[in-house]
Length: 102
Image (cartoon, rainbow, N blue to C red):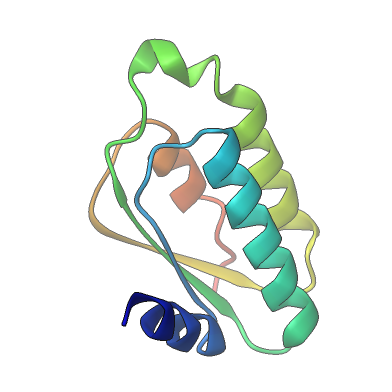
């Protein structure tokens, strides 16, 4: 059920970010965004965010991952729309600001 639901969301250009930002989640996020950008660059990618992020002290150790998400969001042809569901603290708040104006 989980993989079918994930496939459905990807077909609809929907991403959901709720985990803390670390190397693996950044790698997975960037590869998924690149895949969606290549598959259908005319449709907007909708990114839904809900998470408290890392602690304030961990924020500076995760800075390179946050910047790489920012760079990929700004460099792709497809527009990225962000919407916060619930809370978005620390780096989740920064990532929510990366969306394009619609």
